[in-house]
Amino acid sequence: MDTMKSASPMWRRSIVTRIFVVCFVCIHLPLLGLIASLSLLEGGDNAHSLFVVLGATLVGTVLCLGILWQLIAPLRRLSTEIAAFRMIGEFGEARLNKRGDDEIAVVTRAVCGLVSEIEAIGERNDVPAITDPLSGLRMGRAMLDEGEDLFRRCQEGKEPLSLIIFDLDHFRAIREEQGRAIADKTLVAVGDLLRSMTDDNSLSARMGGSIFMLLLPETGQDGALEFAQKIGDRLDSLVVDPLKRGDLSASFGVSQLSPEMTSVADLIRDGDMDLFRARETGRSRWRSAS
Image (cartoon, rainbow, N blue to C red; front, side, top):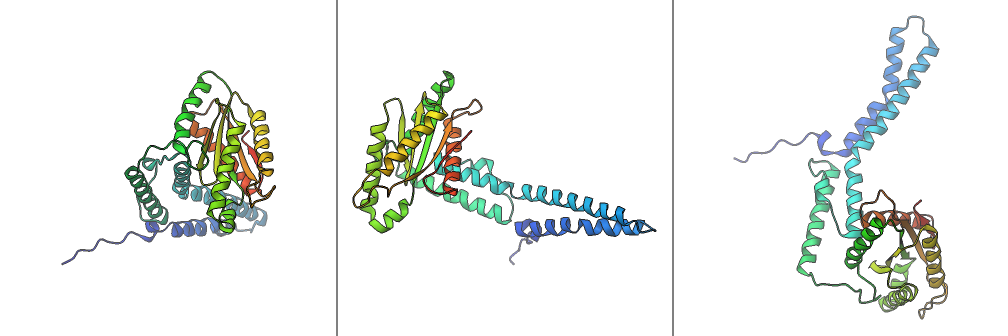
């Protein structure tokens, strides 16, 4: 005879149920406070009742937001790890909470499984690759390894170090409308452009897709912003037939080495967040971490 495990309570299995219950209880705290106040007052002090309701509303709102913030904490951590895996190839599965039966736990376990499969495929096809065949720039892993060494040197020598990361605007549309050959030709042209603008002390790479990154030693915030502007101007005047002058642009994120950073991953994270904000406000934009 088959034995069946008892199903987990709905409270444990559904984050939606938990959010609903929390909101329901917190929203009704003012009503409960009003009922309690009226039951204790014989004369019906309306001012006192009003203050009780307002106070209960404030408490309920703060309590609701605080509990919801805690409920979605695992989702925030998962989002952070996905961003790190996307940018630097590192996924901190040990920092994630995979226990439970709610929606976030289920998604977390699924993402961990997918990441493991991706890493396994990468190991089976682990061929040393340093240079991107299209742009002629460093590939992401080589950039991270060399970037970490450069980060340590600048940190120990207390020298400035800036990062520029940019994403070509509407690159997917170029690929879909002009074809893959023109899209690849565009990446080749951007690689040539960056090599012509940088020296041997700087590091440049194509991190994947249409995202490019530069590490500029001995360069502060103002210098990095000026350099990003120059790249934008050069892209604007770049002609990749059949694309015309002005068809290419990019959105930029700029970050600088700061004392609290512990690795080049921190520098990349700040730049990536600024790139995200730049794309949110429109194309061909610059954002810099202060």
